[in-house]
Length: 65
Ligand code: SF4
Image 1 (spheres, rainbow, N blue to C red):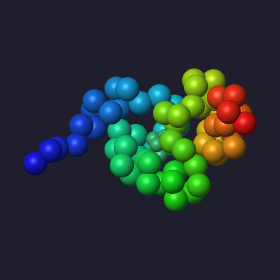
Image 2: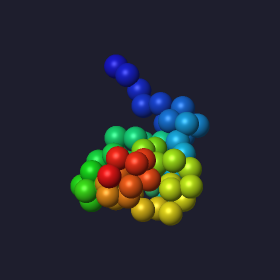
Image 3: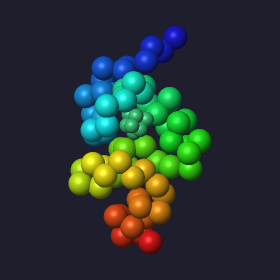
Image 4: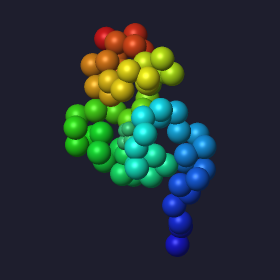
């Protein structure tokens, strides 16, 4: 049985928001997906700091819109 690698996940997580889901990627993704959003790791550093996790913002900052 695999165990969750929370500490490893935290080490590579770029999210700057103080959040209890940090490192628990399954919960993080499920939360943002339920909101119609993407998690912090999709965003470049400056965009991540705005805490705007919308798909529209992702498309804008990555030049895909
Ligand atoms: S991306 Fe969202 S859910 Fe994930 S750790 Fe950051 S604030 Fe929490």
